[in-house]
Length: 269
Image 1: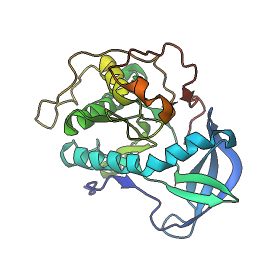
Image 2 (image 1 turned 30 degrees about the horizontal axis):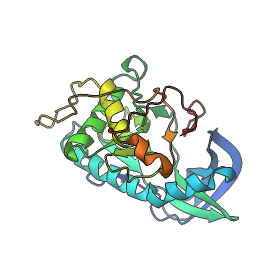
Image 3 (image 1 turned 90 degrees about the vertical axis):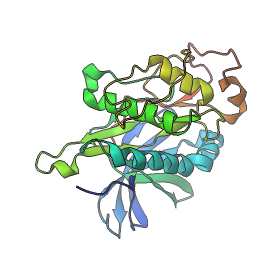
């Protein structure tokens, strides 16, 4: 069985990329282009190259201040999960690299095809009817991160694919990218929906057979509320509104208004 104790899915030692003008996806705030790695172990392999639209430079700056910290925290919890989960339920989390090309900044990651959104950062959880057992497993992973952090955060916005290899069961695994973290301190950038993001997830989360599967009883909030209008799109908010994401603040969002949000129906990477 492969060793997934390090759950990072990286670009290895490829240190350059060629970016085409072919769009893999376009959201409200970012565009994803097709690319290919140059050199190293991923030479000529496909890459997803994401950049912010020029008018959103402020959110871009906030995003890149914390993006790799978000990825590293998510990878750490995924590595813990991999030590005890059943074979085939392991998680690999993409850790991209920033490339500056022609004065523009791109987040470059190994491409993921057959893209699925399992959870978002505003309380959305994919239906088991649509995504089967994989949706329940990823929902449980978010719950696990809350328990392991002592109730301080959840890793959410889980998106990617379940890679099934019928010829080699050792290669079956989840491959995820672009996670978000909702934390009580709201320290993880514009996709961190703070305490209200945590509350909203648990308001909709029903424990399933993957929860508590490590033999421990996982903690969860006793009383919760749905603070957001759920959407499978990734929600972004400026640091200027952090105070509104504390549970002591009564603000709710039934329509998104000024919330910055990525479209989701275009995603296939």
